[in-house]
Length: 377
Image (cartoon, rainbow, N blue to C red):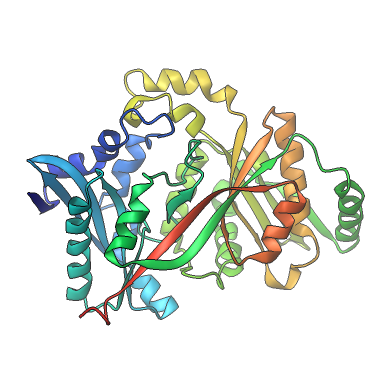
């Protein structure tokens, strides 16, 4: 028998947070999240998401043992900015038992109906700025930092329930050990043209981090405004994420393009610390995890490219290709020879052409699902 319990106590929340470690025990490609970061994500008093929106968390028990979890999410900002009266599910995990998964999904569907929402979309862990999508291909290697990983059968569970594809997203693995020969003269011409148009590229100024990030937020919101599901990040949301990433950031991996002191484009990458976290038991730094973090951090040889954006009026000029080229030039000098760029929407043809031109290949795919509540009432 499956029992669904709403998370209300600290003990239940701890069980909710620890459940992935139980589900993926023994999986060589599972990377535990950093426990301190996970804990902050569920702090209703401090996490910025809860200032404007809401979520409830549910645990599934089978034979009195924790067997699954899910979150029901109402993202008021998404509803307002995108005009979609959609609820979301996130943080889903389950043992390989459809009865457990169905009971969890039933609970979210009921929650969304009670909220008078029209659809349920997911997985989306709060917003599109967080982890989204179920992995559908690329199960044979660990995820890079801040990317999802899941059991193959999760897709089967949701399709069996009646969810259908909303959107596919792709990760591209790019070798950065050398620039493809045919691109060298092209990049030189582009760089010359940018220079003649007073467009320059520089690394992030860490000494002026707060001001740099506030400028970054403005262009980020502008560059991404037309993407599906995008919601402008408020300053408190953006700064919390930025300050968290600052601990592992390398200014040489965050490049800004400017024209006459106006920020017009950016690229942001971080070292793939999942190559270290995979060695740390249950994501806890104490007592031994911190030692492993310090020991293996200098052995990281891959990047996670978080975001790249170019203001609409400057697109099509090759700024994105030059940003990638400069990023890889810096990473090679620091013995980092590959990068994974994600997420890339399946219909973002201009970005896909740039990545493939740099030698990138699709390495992992993810799917967002949707369930229509109006036809199921």
